[in-house]
Image (cartoon, rainbow, N blue to C red):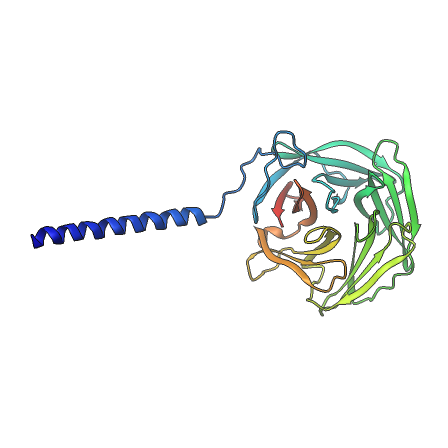
Length: 318
């Protein structure tokens, strides 16, 4: 009788152990990171086929289809409702062109190229945003201590929508300067100028009002949050953690604590504190030479990590 009781007790223990192992495996399965969305799922905003929403910390790579002659650089509309389109600026000796690239199926594909007004010029920076209801190209050129800004439509007619010259914007020779177009306040996009020290945590942010046709300064602030030299950190401005313009800095190639490409977001409108600071779905080594741009897929902020040499774009959730 005692032997039967011992066997019964032993069976109960075995069943309990089996149940515990099964439960543990189920918990592991639940907590396992989700796989990447398989290629072929639509990611473009407003995709009628039911675009998939990127899950946190995922990365999907898409090849670039088409040629890249005389590339000036890629741009996105980084505002909250800017969408997922990617724009490519190219040039020849005297003319500028812009081309929209859409995510179709499993690759970014180029649409028709349009000439836009103005000449390439030295020091030109080109960006994209919506100006009074239509997609527009913003061309920013140095003019002594100022900047000349022109806004052009991106249709075949290539109409100049606005232009202006900024107030003087002195530059410290020990700082690197980055320019971006994003809406900091009001309805029209603004020119955001960021000067970063190469050796100390000193950063100056100036906002030139688009509503004044870029003739009035709306903000000038400094912070000392961290050191972000431009050779190691790519900068873009746009909506990431707030509805208006934030500043996002992306590590590109150097070693990081997470061994991943990292994003550090300085939140607007006063740019005095960090928002998101995290590793992304791209290794540090793979980030070398990339251009990082803020975009929005299905209303969610993402970063496009553009690699023209490798002819691919990684879409990273923020």
